[in-house]
Length: 379
Image (cartoon, rainbow, N blue to C red; front, side, top):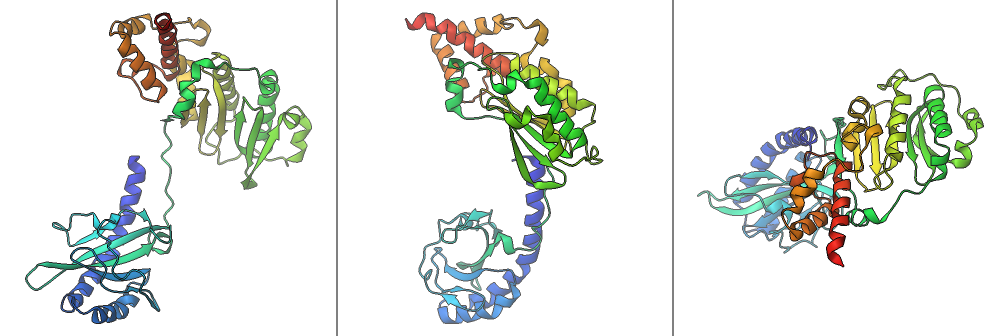
């Protein structure tokens, strides 16, 4: 999990632990003396329930993790879980030999199917021997201190797609779409919508010839524009005039450059090509989805800095059909089995050690060339 997201989760867990630990420690002291009397245990739980104002359920288990009380709710109790073996539930898998109190990771509750979290506190007798567990269940949506909005750390991310698509990658070829035939007009229209009509997020679906747009004045709904609308400049009349947003992190002048890179990625190769691309002028992020079903998310300025050399390993105007003869030769020298394994691993989305420093699209080209070479041996 990304570090910044993990730090946010850790912060929320710290708030919860601070909120829960002391009340639980006080409650187990009264439970210890009555561990053999379920009715007395339940009376303690009912009495303590108001202290745990955000709690969903309270219950006591024996030293084996079997529930020995009814499940205590705010104004009632439930007998369904009496006698249930909870020892293998996620919240019981902590190291209770070292810790008296453990707050579980979030999990999906077995019966309510809702994101939940459970606090477990051990119950010990006067000699320090473990004799049971106090369980306190919480519904995540009812907990305090968990409503801080996580702020995305915007940096380049690459996400592998469906291995089944990659396995058939080199059997496919880009087909000229209606949007490809009218790409200049489509880009010009999208730039007008962004610059003059309040569109802050737009996505091109090149292969299916459509776009989706989101507007500053109505951000909760998206609009779908087919080629009928994209070929008609009158569509601009539908959306009120809106100055380029002051919230934008993408300079208006860079939109043309970004769209030009979209064009080059779309047409640079007939097998590895851009299927979809989006721009968000507020958070400054670019998303790219390629024919190999790989996706990339990166800041607009990093996208412009990388340019075509990042994706193809060379200047797009000087693309040689193949630039990595030495790499191919090195892989082939390791034998046919190694080559076949390399091809299969690449299809499944693994990054090969031989190719780790080579741009993604060039990796696909290398594998394509290896497949061509190995076809000689398959006849």
